[in-house]
Image 1: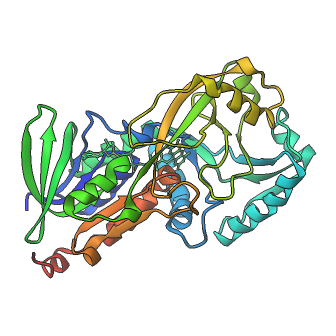
Image 2: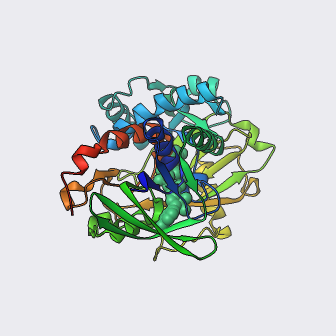
Image 3: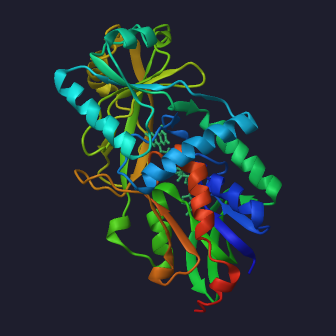
Length: 381
Ligand SMILES: Cc1cc2nc3c(=O)[nH]c(=O)nc-3n(C[C@H](O)[C@H](O)[C@H](O)COP(=O)(O)OP(=O)(O)OC[C@H]3O[C@@H](n4cnc5c(N)ncnc54)[C@H](O)[C@@H]3O)c2cc1C
């Protein structure tokens, strides 16, 4: 085999996996269609280190988020990746929402997040004097991270471990061969070449379902729907009126967690993202100026100081959803596909939020799924 392990996709998850698996394997390839890492979802998100509050008990999202949060804070300290453990307030602005808050706290406790505190009005204004809330939950372990620096560190450590990263290399075909896979690449000069690998790790984000189909896994449940989220920013000087993350009480099926306020490492303050399933899977990052009114109204409920002209369109990201509109929350799909006849082929599909927070825990989980070379030879074609 040319490679022992080939990872497809240099987003935050593919890069975290590359760093992890190249610690022990000396022959790791990482293939990325763009000319640099993190050109898609990993650089179009809120950069929040989530606490793991909302996810279904025992789901991968719950477990990997909580473990990932701990690993991510440790990693940032170790490698000087900029982060801020600023904490987050989930605010109730109506009597109805106050009732929901206790349910959120109970879900969090079931997931092992037992540090949430219920705050009354005076305590809220001690923390954030400029917001309006009747009651709030405070999550002290939530924070933010500079995702670009994080990815850069994963890349540096991977390369230092001996991982070979090929940018401008789009995987166009995958076929099963004896004890492994043949991968065909379209390179930046539009030339095709192929190589062989024992293990394939599909971390291709928005097109991970298509990469999975290349090998032969066709499963309607793994079909990705593009779900866009747009942001507006709060223009200076009012951005300085908020120092923590502030979220409204979430929608019951968690299609999104409501237009919220996130701060970033550069002092910027964003509102969003909203949630809109696109009619087809196109990379549509266009901003909708006409949404200003809706963003303003949502945020005004808990940011009384905000005026319509204090916000401006900022950016958009696209969630790779396997959850259809209206369905209940779906878990990450992370699977070694021996069961479908593809030993050594590991799929990561539907890696939406909290994928950034969970990235290092996901990498450890995936490393444990890799069959050893002797197991691999039990599955000749
Ligand atoms: C609006 C929004 C807000 C979010 N906020 C948060 C948050 O606050 N906290 C959090 O934890 N998570 C958040 N997330 C989720 C997080 O951003 C993702 O889980 C994470 O970035 C996914 O990383 P990835 O590596 O799987 O995907 P990507 O970043 O999409 O990387 C996949 C890579 O694969 C490459 N690729 C695809 N097909 C091929 C191919 N055939 N050949 C070669 N390369 C290929 C792509 O070019 C891409 O670079 C948010 C997501 C969105 C959309």
